[in-house]
Image 1 (tube, rainbow, N blue to C red):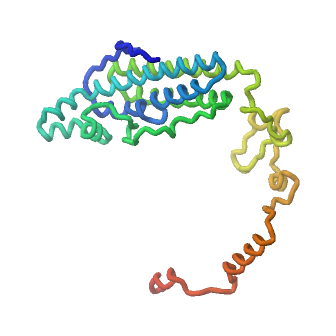
Image 2: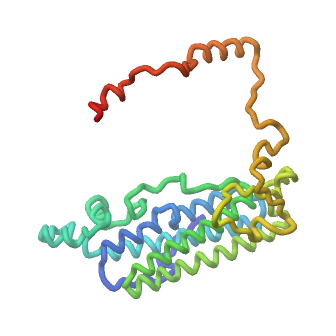
Image 3: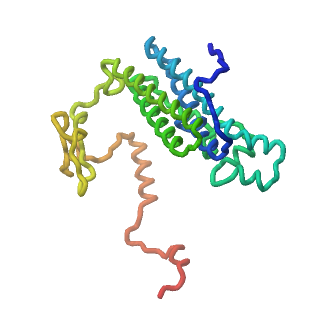
Length: 290
């Protein structure tokens, strides 16, 4: 059961309204790497988790992400406070238009949402459950969570670099730092699972698990721990990169006699004539040639 505490997790101090900055920060409210997506990702994982420790971790962080959503939303609303009043009370049109435009979608926020906060990203794209991607396999989901926190951290970095409001920048710095803390927790949880690689139960086919195929040969070819050493069989022979199963590399399917007969009829009806060179619409429409 959730209880709402009216005090934010982090104090929001906005120096002055700035609808354009509000629009950019909306990315972390309803964007793919935003706080709502994170909360729903970890909450759905936590509900399905059978390990008590991981369940507690996931639900704790999911709940914290909701608190971060409240912080981000509050920042957006405070940055829009000026334009909210202007829209409601009818400021002189030219001045209002100048305030809410300027190369971003801040005008959309003002016009449609009245300076409030919307479940969209900074480009106005609605939030979608497609951002939430659990597979209910902890060794896969924890890796996905680590990557999600890393992406969110980078977005916060970029927002901080674009922000000139000290109070907002401070709050964004807190949110960015919590992404680091969550990465640490998820990594520790992942490595607390002794058999965590490869994800899942099946080990993979041994003849291919440790093989690196050098598929893009030429200038810039590099060797490193990702493709050399005792654990790697490095294959750059083109002949050995095809039909690696020992077969001929062709495609076959077993069909009934009736299906084979139908397939032959289709092939005969749609067969190309390599000797044919008919005049086509493209040639008729190309005009006179010099």
